[in-house]
Each structure stands twice: as structure tokens, then as C-alpha cells.
Image (spheres, helix red, strand yellow):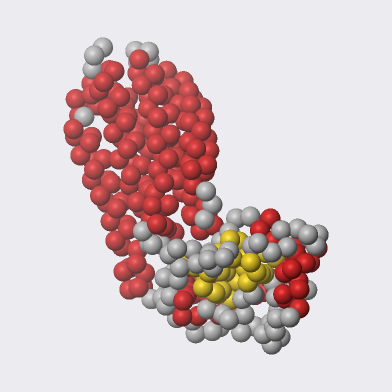
Length: 326
């Protein structure tokens, strides 16, 4: 394995083999430019990088798509969907995760404004020689990348402690906050003991949904996909899941032979809590990514702490509002 400085920014390792095309070109114009352009040694051209007149990255164009498209087709219409990029300040470890997740051979690097700076090639992590025509050998390259990733993740115990402990403290804060909320709403809990019995179930449902949403959000953040549409889709999904789970839990709570308002409060709290859990699971990783922190390490503890606090607050507030009046 290569001795890779994972904590260094990708801007130090940019490859000069990237070939750019203007987005206002047609296919035949692009091919004419390429014929007169010297190629770098024996490097294999897999992607072309499409930029506008200001040098801003518009998209990535696979070689196969360029060669098989009509001569008069506009280059800007041929770029592949779901542009995945690295910022110049991202580290080699951030890039390694993208290589492992998306099985890419190169990733474009841009500055804060989105201007194309160059590419980070997969050869940064491995000196293995591979033939793109042989999928078995190509798969071995990505398996090697996975080994790099695991090697970094399972470094020295002290390094793992330093990276993970601050975020795990979020769980402690969340637990203490929930305990404080329980003390704040002790009157309704003491009067309706059934509420305490359902707290673990409601927390489990909300946390499970938030983890699912968080996983989707991390992938969306990495691929720079549109967040507004994803957030709306996740909200509707969480609402439907919350309604279904709320009805089921409310039905189960009927076996305790409480006033009818109690199952309604429990079921309604499940629905609202799961809606918030889905939204938090989607929003927190995006916020962490924008803050240039590692969403894979920080998102879990922060999201779960926020979900726990929100769920307990919604549940006990609804109980106080609707049950203490009856």
C-alpha cells in the first residue's frame, strides 16, 4: 500500500492529466480540439471535464458518451447527471471515502466559487497497474481503496479517541437533556404511568427513522445533489411512516384501558416525532457538511441527540397539554 498523507488537502495532489472541454462546443468541435491536443503519456482518458467561459465546472463527460453522440450535439447536454466534486480544502481521506462510495477513477476539484482546478486521480492511493477492460482487475483496485480506508479508520486508539470522543459527548448531553425534561414534566408522567412505558418505543422509532434519513443525507451531501427536493421527499416519507407507526402504537396502547385521549396523544406524538426525526436526519448531515466537518463521524451523535431531545419534548408537551386538562 502507498504511504498516503490522509490529512493533507487534495489541492496538493492535483493531476495535470485532466482534459477540459467548453460547454458551448458541439461534439465535432470537441473531437477536432482533441485531435490537435497532445495527450499525457500513456494515461487512459476516462472522463472529460466541461467548463464554461469563466472556467467554472459544468459537469463531467464520459469518453464513451462523447464518442457515441451525434456530431452536432451540444457538449453541455451530454454531461453526466449527479456531479461529484471535491473542494480544494478537502483532505485525501474525504476523497478516499468518495472513491470508495462511488467507485470513481478520478474526481474533479473546485474552489469555493466552483472554478475547476484539476482532478484527483485514483492512482494517488495505489500504484497498482490495472486494465479498464478487465473488470476483475478494476474491482481489485477498489478493494485496495477499501483497505486504505479501513487502515485509516482503525488507526491508533488515541487518534480514534481524539476524533470520536467530542461527538460522543453529544449523546451524553442529549441523555442529560432528556432526563431534565422528564423531571420538568414529572406531574403528567406520575399521573399517567403509561406514558413512561412508551418512551423507549417512541425514542427507538424516531432514532431508527433519523438514521435512515441521515444515511441518505450523507450520500446526497457527498454527491452535491439538490437538497430542497430531497428534504421535501423525506418529509413526506417520514409523515407517512409516522402516521402508520402512530396508528399501530396507539392501537397497542388501547390494551392498557386508559381514557381514549391517552392513545390519541401517544399515537399523535409518534407521528409528529417521526416527522421531526426525518427532517433532522436529513438536515443535520447537510449542515455538518457545509461546516466542512466529517458528516460520517459527527452526524450520528449530533442527529440522535437532537432527535432524542425533540422526541421527548414533543411527547411530554403533548401529554401535558391534552391530558392534564382531562
